[in-house]
Image (cartoon, rainbow, N blue to C red; front, top):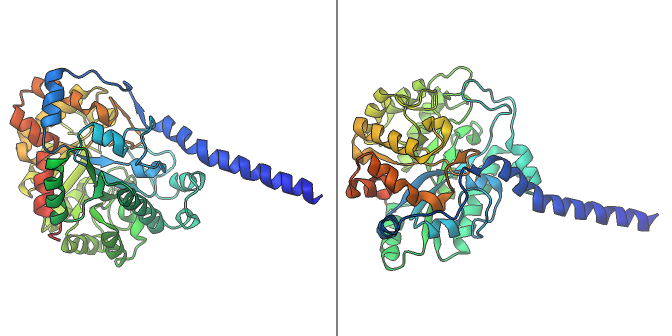
Length: 388
């Protein structure tokens, strides 16, 4: 009897181990797809321009959600550290997704269900991540920080001093990259203002009040009520700004955008978005919002997936960038792919040089292109990260 029980337990352990090895990758492959797989054909002229560009940056990736070791190259998803280095990306923002609703859509969602708990279970994460959104977010941040600790070619940027040191080091050795930690939805504060300090201590420097549903901080563009900041939300924004964290208005309702801009003492970010003039929809920005963000000194990252740009090719992103620049000015626009965000993109991160002919077709000069693909993000962070 004992031998049968032992064999059963060993078999169960093997099945669980195999499940943990293969199920997470299978799940991710269903969500993070590319229209054209690598390798990508880039002209010699564009390849030389891209490789010589001093600072390329992207404002949004959800790669930490999927449980992969980012130090290892894989064909899953869109981003890992080896692929970032191959693509000459100097900085990638890694944003934490802690909760998404079942039946997620762009029109109306509530907080009554959660898809992410199942991911935490099948990925074999700390059981505390199964029940606590805060622990879930801190666990993902710890994984990114561990990637940096294990890899001399990767570091996490927390301050202006960090960024200046990194830029200097990268000038001598471009075969390295960096990450910036962000949060997509401050429901992970679990209603506790003191948890803003825990996020800051963990390295978060960009925080979005909301994601796909209204929460205790404010209203989402995809929520049921789409209201503005709550009284608690206003205290959260004030504290985050005081600490030197940038407020990310991606997915925010019109009312939340207006409330944050009315209160803001620092420039804001919209990490990944489209423009309503070319792609109508709640998740995209109106021209009035673009102008208000520019007046605030903010930065807008233009996304690379169909729901944001109403196109499944890179020309759609280039057209959205053209419109945003025309409305806001060149210095306020950057890249915000939404890589690994459960979306289909034209390519993975190694295909980013394919942006160049599309941007040139929109009439951008070489200096303007360098600003859009990373120079503006570098300058924004050098001005707005905590000093030390």
